[in-house]
Length: 326
Image (cartoon, rainbow, N blue to C red; front, side, top):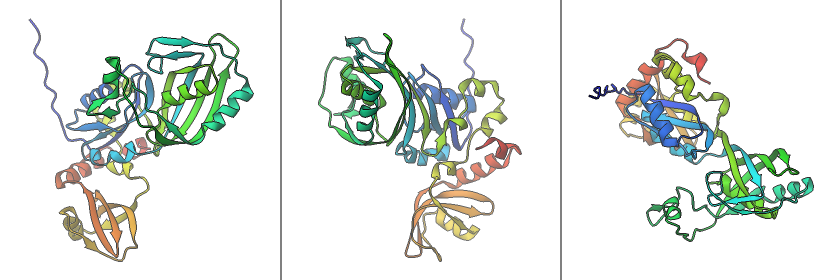
């Protein structure tokens, strides 16, 4: 006879936790584990990492999910290991090897090719990706053996740094650091570099080390979270405004804060600003985003009154919170 399942008592949690996603889990599986550990009512992640990838995965709770799109659009940085001389069906180590070639690559060849992949480049999205065509993910077509036409897209590689290389053994490989715009497929970059080197290649390891202003030094592992008590776990959650890097701040008194929160525009002696994070002054609390035009503060995405109250209570609690949050 099976023991009865224990029902988890969910609670409102608001903010952002930076997870060091482990290898082998999908982004959604990692999200669900963290959501369960914090007993959070609502959670989502910003930017999928493949199961074979590790690194920075921002997990947004409660009110923070309203601003998660900002980090879907953020620039990223990765460390990638690319195996030379072998092409796989999926472009990474999960797929079967479909072609092998000799590797006759010099350091000079590598330097020249990496220069060609720095700056604006064009990529064709891989079939094994979550990009959708006619309402279906491309990987669904790929599993059925169907190749569909994909539109090339332009992305930008801001930096492509060679961390180390091994070009003379049977297991020739290179390790790269890639600083890139949103929408860059690192496995496609690895494959394209392999083609430019005339030997073929596939991705064997990938780690995201930065997304937007969030870096790997700020992350926490699942194992560390599991070892913590609930107070320590909640102390790892950064306030919602951590997602609003690059926004100017506007503070409102209690009367104007209440009206702004109801969706009303406010007038003040403000210069025009495109991106504004709006706060109540007492107690200090994020109300939402806005922009200023002609002295008018025009609401954008707003928190609900319960979300504002719950956030104030959550971040007023542990005295060690400011020491733990980066």
